[in-house]
Image (tube, rainbow, N blue to C red; front, side, top):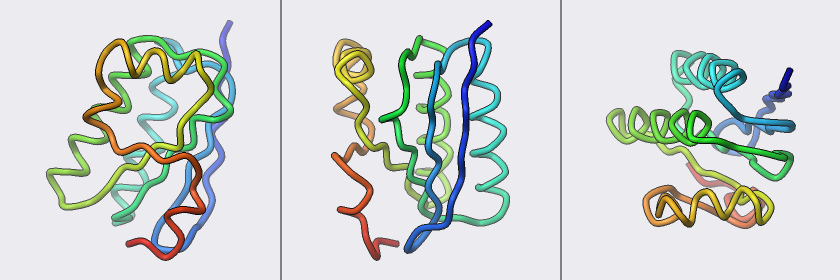
Amino acid sequence: MTTLDVTTSERPGGVQVALSGELDIATAPKLEDEVRRLEDDGHTLIVIDLRGLEFMDSSGLRALLAADSRARERGARIVLVRGDERIQRVLRITRMDERLELVDDAETLAGAA
């Protein structure tokens, strides 16, 4: 059974969601629920930190894309902190690295709203 730990913390201008473990068909709903809760709370900047992920499949990618689409519709931002090479490869081969907003570290967003 795969596991995903989701840790949410306040950050300048928004919230940060740190992921660790595996983001796949079994665990993607956990991320989706947390992001929707943060959206419902009115956060306009949600940073999703992928550095702790060991694996991500198409279900995880779909969850990230859905969150990004909803954010754009409401004038908000989803920003992803790049994961390791395995995670970046998934984003590259699907060309989602061209669509999603990616940063090397969350500190580059200090004070961003």
